[in-house]
Image 1 (cartoon, one colour):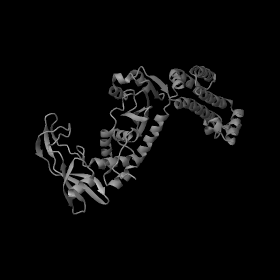
Image 2 (tube, rainbow, N blue to C red; image 1 turned 135 degrees about the vertical axis):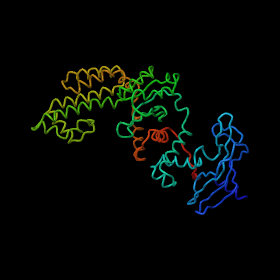
Image 3 (cartoon, helix red, strand yellow; image 1 turned 120 degrees about the horizontal axis):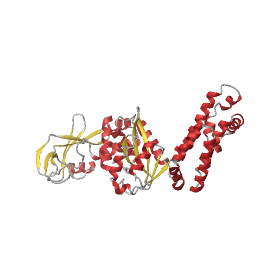
Amino acid sequence: MRITTVFRRLLGVEKMVVEEVLFTIGGDLAIRVHPTWRRSRCAACSRKAPRYDRQPLRRWRHLPWGRTSVQFLYEPWRVNCPRCGILVEQVPWAATRSRFTYEFEELAAYLAQITDRTQVVAMLGIAWATVGAIVQRIVARRLDPERLSNLRRIGIDEFSYRKHHRYLTFVVDHDRRRVVWAGEGRSSGTLQPFFDLLGLERCQKIESVTIDLSAAYIKAVREGLDQAEIVFDRFHVQRLASDALGEVRRSLVRSLSAGEAAAAIKDTRFVLLKDPENLTDHQRSKLAEVQRTNQPLYRAYLLKEALAQALDYRQPWRAERSLKDRLAWASRSKLRPFVKTARTIRKHLPGILAYIRTRLTNGLVEGLNAKVRMITRRAFGFHSPEALTSMVFLCCGGLHLYPPLPTGS
């Protein structure tokens, strides 16, 4: 068997002919190659096209063999494509404008999925910015073009990726549990490119949208998906009551300087916010002391728990009746934060009751939000939304990479 044939099989690249194998002065392996097809092909449309002229020698890095770096050498032709014009020809081992083979980029993207960029740089010997460029090319090639088809239930949330209010809004498919779209900003106009990309027909198929109580997202969904049912996330609804309880506690701390009532309020923040069934014996005694010495604060605590219990009902009519009773109580409580919370919940009551019917929450979206935060820390921050978007799709967009690694027997 010829040595060139042995190397072609060891390299594992299809539609490539090995012409010559050379060792450089530095000990690297340089392999002269050329495509198997006789007529050159356009890099844009893959159609056969007449050759125009020849380019200087180019190098592409392939997967290393142990400590030995492997490079492909070839002088590509420029072609005069009738459809695309004059372009450099297509080569079967690498993408246009890339100096790495497909296998090398696949391995780099796989490593970027599971570890931080510093480790990828150290393992593959490439630059920090090169990792980001490879990730963007892999996402562009491998991202499912049908990810926006058959969307029925989606969730929307924002993520702060830099200081000074730099946000990224992403859309999650509840059924396939993956990110399907991301865009810079968090205003009502941020989602308009997503609606334009979907088109009118696919927009009409969306049944439910889970969001927080953001006025910008509410406006965007009502304008772009007027037939979809808005479902407000339970966590954000309950947080309204928790924040109101916190305001009541802080106002009482400021008004009480000393005495038994002031001592009872001390160190009660987490006791008041914690679920009753999870309280320890010491925390229960602390709560009983609050009940005995500070009725306004204990009333705020009961209101918080009553609103949470109303959301536990499975029947919408029972939940609606219970919520209205609790809201009436909050309005009469003479606690200004809870009066404000009651007005907010009444305003968004249909979307809150939609949660009772569908039991949909933004839990999946918040979980992916936490994963995106981990990705950001792992990369020590992102300076552009495009780089972060590519990493989000790489790790949360349902991409399955197949790195050229040996399989176990």
